[in-house]
Amino acid sequence: MRLTKSENRAYQLRLLEAYPLCQICEEQQSIECHHVRYGRFGADKDDSKQIAVCRECHQWCHAHKHESIEKYEEVADENWQRFGEC
Image (cartoon, helix red, strand yellow):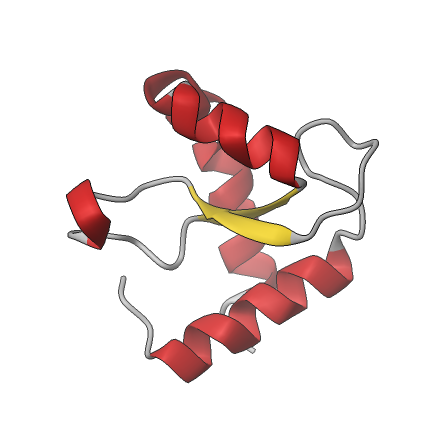
């Protein structure tokens, strides 16, 4: 699902507020959101599949794309169910 830029930013702000700690390591402050599903250069990006992460874990997700999809897609779906329809 694609959101407008303003809808996406509002959703990301809700995630970062709800999860002040990274949803992966649960130790460092969440400072950005990671799209669990995204295509090359943003094609087919699914804005409903995001998790709140620290910079280090965000870099890990990009370096381990397939592993991170398997691990965090369910978390992203739960995030959308809780905060996406607001």
